[in-house]
Every structure is written in structure tokens, then in C-alpha cells.
Length: 449
Image 1 (cartoon, rainbow, N blue to C red):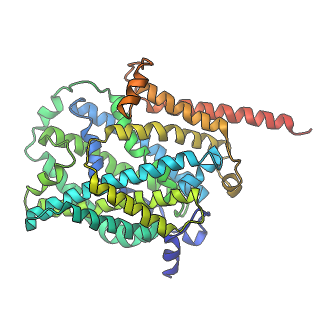
Image 2: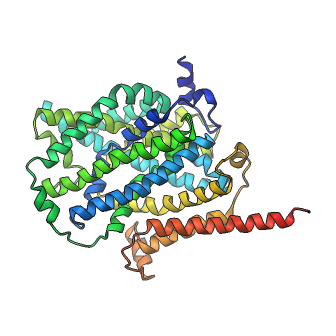
Image 3: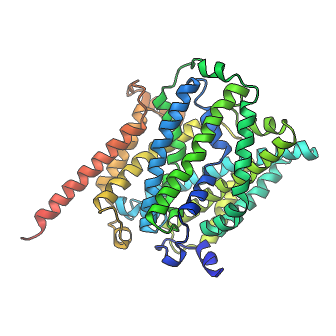
């Protein structure tokens, strides 16, 4: 009975067979709930204050989580329906070669997230070792957890859930979250924090954009895991609800940590927690253990995405290569503010999801194997719909390198304060729906009566 796990660990781009579709709603929920527990999610919540007041920050978190997790849940359901990896799935709306565009971006974001995760994990481990043993050796911890991410990625989603989530993370996560929440609230004047005014510079909807961005970055990866779910319902509910609960909790915790303990720097958080005594050390160790799953997920998904470009490439070799690149990056890159990185991802993946959803609905809410593997090389109308949504997002909320922001700002972006997520989604969805309606009309006219 162990053979399916070994086969699953290197399963390629072909539709997952029924014997490997073993992750039910609870298992899928545990997987995504565990992926939602990250110090970097706390940092995203910290980015909302003090620009927003605490009530407005919590409102932005709720709005962003509802919108972002609705997208994630639907993407998970589509992945469970099609049973192929996320970037292979994009062949259906964009065409075989058209899918190479999001594939390249997704590989880069997977490596980028892996670097961020390894840096924060190594920083936390160094703080623990410094407190307990008197040495930091952050470079050593980077190598150690880079190796751990490699091993977990080689297990694949089923092995990861069965051997890591069920046996370790399901116990470590509640303890870590409970302690960190108590630590954030201990001694805080909640009445004063609740009544304090925001400093401005960020609207509620713009804050929601930040929240959506951290969730929607998982949308192109969702099918990599939900293709192993037992049903579309298990994939959709497990991913959407599973990620929603810890997401709301940790984003709110991030906002509270800034206001109650002035902690917005992710690199400073581990050392501050460790100073709290033995219970704090245990909590940080538990969170450190569960943090490795984000590195696993990004290494695994970047590798699976590469298989859309090179289907015959060995998945274990790709995983080893991605792990090596991410570990090397974590050794030389310092952790900096990544709010612009999040918003840049949002501007790419929100309209991409809109195009996928419009095409999937037009296909009768079901992708056949031919829809994916016999797709045309390009579907230029839907590629254009994606680009149009990206352009609108950037115009409404320019983000990225300084030269790019300056260039976009010459186009006089409006200051509506409405955010960019919903407008860009609606624009791409509407254009994609119109393109497909015109295409169907032309096809109907061409069919002889």
C-alpha cells in the first residue's frame, strides 16, 4: 500500500488517476490550513497599520480574506475537476504556448517565496539557537531547512499530509497560534488600540488588496495539490475554508503586534518572541516547524510548473534544482519589506484567475482532458483579457520597481481609494466572456444547417 505515495511523489502533468485521489475535505483543509500558518502572513497584516486604524484594518482583513479565499476555493475546485497541475491547467484558457507566460511568472514567484520562507525560518532558528546555545549560525540553519524543504517536496502532497501534517503540524499549529495571540494581547490596552485613529495613506479597499494578494498568490498553485482531492467539493471547500481560518487569525495578529508591541519587521519578531521565556521558545519552535511547509509548497509547485515547459524532465531533479537555487538565494538575500512584491503578484494573478474562471464556466464548469491537452497553441483573445486586467490593476494601484511606478504615475492614476482587485477581476472576466461569446457566435454561423 506504500507504492501509491512513492508514485504520487513524482506524478507529472498527466491527469491524476482515481487511486491517487485520496485527500478528502478534511485532509485538504488540513493541508491548506497548515499552508496558511506563516510568519510572512503576520507581516502582511502588519503592513496595514498604523496607516489604518485597528477596526478598519480588521475590516480590510475580512474583506480581503473573503474575496481572496473565494478565488482560492474556486481555483481548488477547478483543479480537482481537471486533475492536472495549475500551470498545465492554464493551457485550457490561454493555449499550450500561451500557458508558458504564467508558467514563467509562477516559477519565479515560487522561487521568490521559497527564498523569503527560508530566510525567515533561518532567522527564527538562529534566534532560538542563540538563546539556548549561544550561537546563531544563520547560514547553517538556511542549509538545514533548505534540505528539509527538499525532503518534504520529494514526498509530494499525499506523503506530506500523511507524514507531516497529520503527525506533527496538527499538534504544533494550535499551540503556536494560541501562545502568540496571548503574547500579543498580554498587557495591551485594547480600548486605546481600538479607539486610535489611523495615520492615513491607505484606504480599506487598498488594504484589502494587500490581503487578497497574499491569498491569490496561491491560486495558480492550488491545482498542484487539489488534483489529489477526492472530489471537486473536497478541493474547493478544503482549500478555501482551510486557508481562510488561519489567514484571518494571523493577519489580525500581525496588525495587533505592530500596535501592541511595535513589531512590523519580520526579522525582529523571532528574537522578540524568544525573549518571552521557555513557553515562548516552545511556541516559536512549533511555529518554526510548521513554517517549513510553505518552503515545501513553493519548491514543489515551482518544480511542477517547470514540467509544463519540459514534461519529460525528472520531477525529483527539478525539485533538487529549485531547492538549491532557493537555498542559495536565502544565503545572500536579506529579508526586506515585501508589500510591493505581494501587490505585484496580485496584479498578475487576480486577472489570470478571472480569465480561467470565465473559460471554465463557458466550458460547462468542467474541463475534459482534450480541453487541456488538445488546446490550440494560443488563445490570443483570452491572453489579451489577462493583460488588460493586469494593466488596469497597475493603473489603479501602480506597484513594482521604482522606474515602473514612476512610468505608470505619468498616466495620472485615479485616487478613488477603491482598490484594484475587484475592478481588474471584473475587467478581465468581462473581456474574456465577450471574446468567448463572439467566438461561439462565429462557430455557430460556420456550422452548416
